[in-house]
Image (tube, rainbow, N blue to C red; front, top):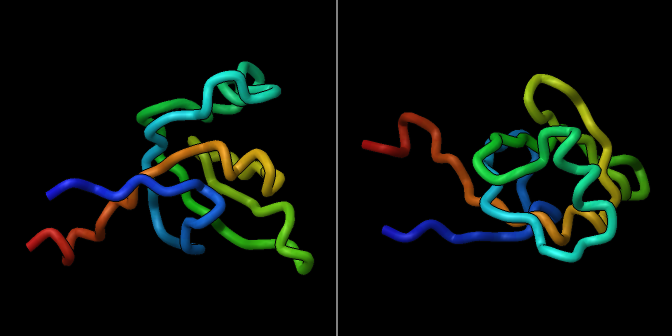
Length: 86
């Protein structure tokens, strides 16, 4: 079964995802690596600001706020819960 890749901006709050890729040529993409935003890393959307922009994400034990324009260029796949794997 092939997993669906979606932009991080479409990820559901509280669910866990794995970063598949970051659009190349994205402004500031090299800075994102310094925050642990790179393929293979787990990410969990925690909460949205009242205006829905930015969104707080847990990445490698830290909480980072990303603007909507940045999270639209980061692609992830959903990590199913253990109960869903059976």
